[in-house]
Length: 185
Image: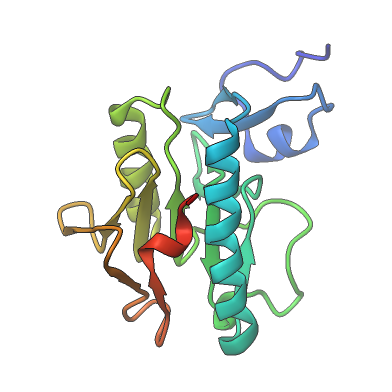
């Protein structure tokens, strides 16, 4: 197992170029943080979220990114987060095209599907990182409670329950999805 890159501070470029050791990492304040594999329910919910975002992107432009896509949220020390799903508006895609490495900016929408083992403080830290980097909307999709916490800012949060409808607001104009569509029956 190659672990020579596990030094602090690590840069986004070093993280991207590291030898594959079979694990997925985020970079928090220059320190690599290994992400553990998720459970089946998490995987299904994440795929459903990505599916509805992809449907939207195909109709309205922009791109939906899956769970292993890195976004550089800050430099010196570097922060690279990989939300469970994300959306980038078409107008923000570089003229040179979609980068082969990490996106050099925050997504317009970041979606996290917390696993049972995720600490609330870690989820809050991700929310803060996204907003401080320019993300305009964060969804926390909670399989355990079958709810979606919609953050328009770190302080502006609304809970949408299973019988409700999720809206994209100004970030995804025209996006609407029944919350129950995101969860396993």
